[in-house]
Length: 194
Ligand SMILES: [Fe+2]
Ligand SMILES: [Fe+2]
Image (cartoon, rainbow, N blue to C red):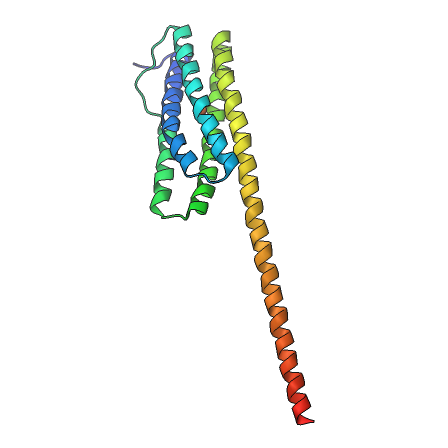
């Protein structure tokens, strides 16, 4: 069907968002399983529940508009899913996989925030207040999830920094020990020569 009106585009974009949520819902349990950080695991499990609600909100949006969602694939969400699969092929260690998943989750939430920001605007522009309210609910959840993901990214980053600092300290200690050993050897040599 050709898209000729803003309403056509709105309905088309809503179907795309629905497809994205279905794809993301399929990914979340695996991401939660791959998470060892407790807050990340909890955030992903909570977001799985939220995503089910987001899909219900989208169904309600279609009902309110008196429209049917067309069968479509969100290629952006599919791309994010493929990125995740591709990373698996690089055989990451569990810690690195978790880090990559956090970065991937941040990208996904950013995409969803952009999606719902546009959809809320379209709903408002077209005078669909109830629809705008439902979409705003989804947008708020995506923003909240993005914050939780960012907090985990920061915590994991702090661990990386702490480990680097520890390694540097250990290296300095080893260097000190080596120099002390050298000095002792020289002193002993001097004492023998005297
Ligand atoms: Fe979502
Ligand atoms: Fe999300």
